[in-house]
Image (tube, rainbow, N blue to C red):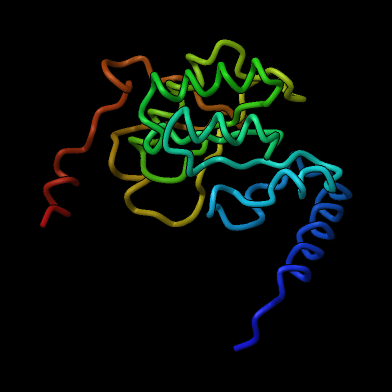
Length: 185
C-alpha cells in the first residue's frame, strides 16, 4: 500500500481548491480529516480561493467555538443530530454569524434528519447571510438510500429546486410506521 505524505496531500487539497474555484463551486467541503479537531484547516483556508466548509462533526458549542475562533472555515456545518439538537445548533449559528462565519447545516441521512434540518433552517435568524442566494442552502443527500426516501410519508417534494418547510406537528412529517415495523430487528 502506498501512503501519501502530508505535504503531498496538502498540495493536492490546495490544487483541488483552485480547480473547484475555476468551476464556480460555492465551497470546498471537508477536504481533510476531521480529527484531531480539524487540524490545519485554518492554514488551508488561507490558501484557498473559495470558501472552506467544515464542522459537520462538531458535538456542541465548545467544539464549534474553537473552530470559529481559529477561523478554521468560512462556512460551519453543524448537524442537528450530532451537535446537541435545535437549541445547540441555533446557538452555534448565532455564534458563527457574530464571528462572520456562514452556516450551512450538515444533512446526510434519512427523512427524519432532513425534516429536522429544514426546520432548523427555518429558525435561523438570517439563513442566507453571506450567501449568493436569497434562499438558505440545504445539503440534500441524493445517493440511493431506502431509509431516506421511505421513512416519512410524502415528505419533501422538490419544486423548482426548493423544499418547503413542513407544517404538520413536530418536525412536520408523518413517519411510515409500517416501514419501521418491516425493518425492525
